[in-house]
Length: 305
Ligand code: NAD
Figure: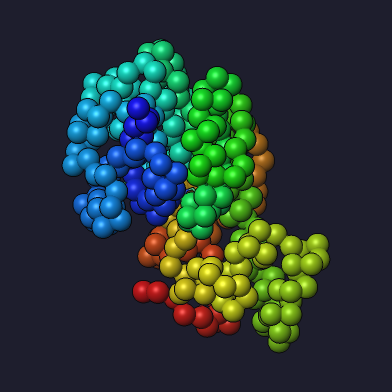
């Protein structure tokens, strides 16, 4: 009999990830607290559980969660009716949400106490990566749990890294996204400076892609329109990866940097810049819209209201 995969959280990322599992022939049942998301999943012909309890009553062999933050993961995994208490011992638990390291370790430890294998497996690659099944998975957990999870992760992604023990997947993800938040601001500053200097932005972009100023935001996800097809800056900055999510990840980075006394001056500055941008009502814009802050009155592009 084929394995039953319970998938919780079918938002921007979870939905295409679940779809790739279905396409690969997995028996997937999904649940989300949002009625809107469940309706969308129904339209895509996903098998829907109408409640969390109903989902777990299907005796899943694997549970995958793709939720916004640590508090959401805690809610579904812990407690009397939580996943850890309800699934069988041979069920594999995979939390793909980007969450704080402490929560991640707490969940992994509770699962271990029950003899259940669990990994934290946050992803990099965004919605495009989720759709194209080209995500990078950053996995924390035992070698045994990693080996068990690898085949299913390979259906949704291309690069599957074992970062270390429980919590290290989220630790690696937080470091990566701190660098990304900083470099998106850097790319925006460079391109907007070119604009103010009246140098053709397209030319500067082409040069940077082939010079030492290149970065992921320059080559893959440019923050200004007209430089690359299919990126949020060309779609009125609809996410994508929202500024709110980036702000959450930067807060996680600063929190753990303070804890281990790491010096992260640019991470702190980026955290402040995204935080203010979100407080001005931009949480739902793509994070590349941070170029608006950098650009000031020279920034004159279309942005979704
Ligand atoms: P999203 O908000 O689109 O989706 C999350 C879904 O979880 C929502 O549909 C929400 O209703 C659901 N949810 C929340 N609490 C729930 C609960 N208790 N039970 C069931 N469903 C619940 O977010 P997303 O963009 O898909 O991101 C999900 C995670 O992936 C986040 O941790 C984010 O940081 C990470 N991530 C996102 C991207 C990206 O580009 N969007 C890239 C890498 C990592």
